[in-house]
Length: 219
Image 1 (spheres, rainbow, N blue to C red):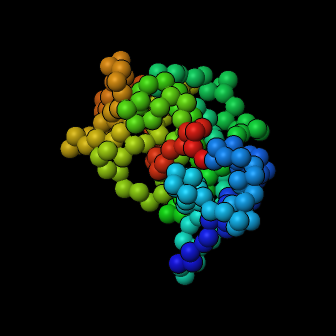
Image 2 (image 1 turned 30 degrees about the horizontal axis):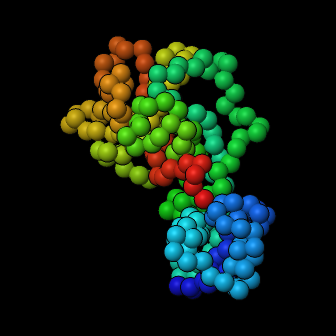
């Protein structure tokens, strides 16, 4: 593995994220002059600053099969909002907005051929794991090759005629059936039973698997 100096990591972070030196200074809570000194190798970050730079760099960099560090594609599109109990009329929903925000993080190299996307978390149905206002990073379940197993956290859609609820749940096996459970401090959120009573008018679809998370306080 090629070991990069802090000055090289700073330069690559600034380039990948499209930061100005002032924006980099704000991200790492230092002065613009300090960023300049780090970038030019006139000084090195220490302590918490070094740790934050390393963490931010690792979020953007992967290892290629030959052991050289390579810059992974940066930018995960936010495809919508996920909120338990919020049923939307799909005839009024635009599933392909033109101005989707993009999170400044690299795609997960474990799934090079699978769609990866982000969803904004609202509400408290999974607040033991993901805070309101954070983002979950998902990979398309059908394309991922991931086998269904207990405690896997998934992006689930419930359909009832033209109404759709988008939520997060944890997969739990009940032997013959799968149960989708919230991870919440709020008892109002209840489990969903998959492949249960066929007479029910609600269809449950697992659309994605959560492979990470992001919050606005992240670098």
